Amino acid sequence: MISFAILIAGLALLLFAGDYLVRGAVALAEKLGVSPLIIGLTIVALGTSAPELFVSLEAAFNNASGIAIGNVVGSNIANVLLVLGAPALIKPVDCRENGLGFSLTVMGVLTALFMVMMMSGWLSHLNGLVLLSILGIFLVWQFRTVRKNLNGPGLGDYHDEIDEVPTQNSRIAAYLLFGMIGLPIGASLTVNGAVDIARMLGVSEAVIGLTIIAIGTSLPELVTTVMAAWRGSGAVAIGNVVGSNIFNIGGILGITSIVHPLIVPPRIIYLDMWIMAAVTILLVVLALGSRPITKTGGVILLTLFVGYIILVF
Image (cartoon, rainbow, N blue to C red; front, side, top):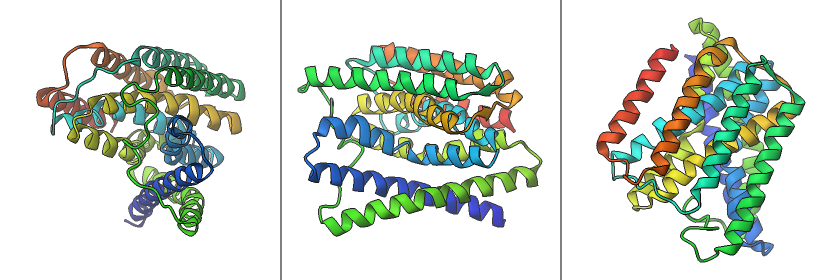
């Protein structure tokens, strides 16, 4: 029970610290006169992935590669089946979004390349550099595209994910401090709790990373898409998932494997990465389709997710 409490406390601290860090960073950027475009494409995008990044780094330094890689693979699966399935129960999610084609292409390329890299049994410094470079190219493309279409729907707007930010300097500093201190502590608690639970249940660390940690660190995306669906902004929902999956592979695993090479658990090579690939293809089909995800579609996606969790255990 203590291990479960530690894990829950760690995930909660990760989510709160990540949220406060993003709000504080956005507020500081606004104070410094940084354009909303830059804030939306970099600070918000990177900041909302901070929980996953710190968990993966902590896991890598603790020789728990299964958690580091399982967290990303599981998050990408959860992002499609859970994060898109849940809001569809509230209101149909419109999957059409202008300019999504290149993002889908980058996501597909990163996923395929990631799978090829994992087949070697480990992710090296060079693998991480390649993944991070592709993410960098994607960000440059986004920046140029948005600058050409500043009046486009939702382009460069970060307020769909960040509702309010502090304005007083003291509060901004407090937000940043809490985020920077809370994230590493939350990551340490999460990884330690997850490792203990894996040993207690007799399952691999990869299984815990693929399920409990992946779901926990995907909660910010889930909340964002649920709120987007509630507001009738389906483009935000689908775009958020595509962007998150790109950042998970290119940013989180890119940075983590540059800092510390990762050993890939055999079960991820033989099973989970193929499920991730199938779910990625499903996301492309949904994004390119002209029909919204209805309540029935949401039930199907959530059923598939529950089926995956059962299969993992």
